[in-house]
Amino acid sequence: MNKEVALLHSAYPSSLRGYVEQRLDGLSKFNERMTGIRAVFQHQHNEHSVELVASIGGSAPLVVETKASSPQIALKHAMASLATSLKRHRTKFLDARH
Image (spheres, rainbow, N blue to C red):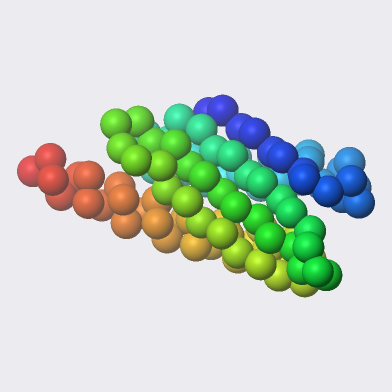
């Protein structure tokens, strides 16, 4: 699975990239057709936002965006939301095959 992490603000610590890549590995278990994921972090007005874009073979990408007071909390909420979307997408795909 392809992983891309973009930190669009220089104030983010370098260790955040490794942390995010490690956490993103766990999302592949929710949909085996996922080919890649991109995480984009931004910091504006004392608020951190993260956008996760999951690429799924033969389908439109799934996009989730959340905001929180810290990048870790924003990532946690975005991952929970994306996991739900990936499960729902997989269920719909399997139902359509039968």
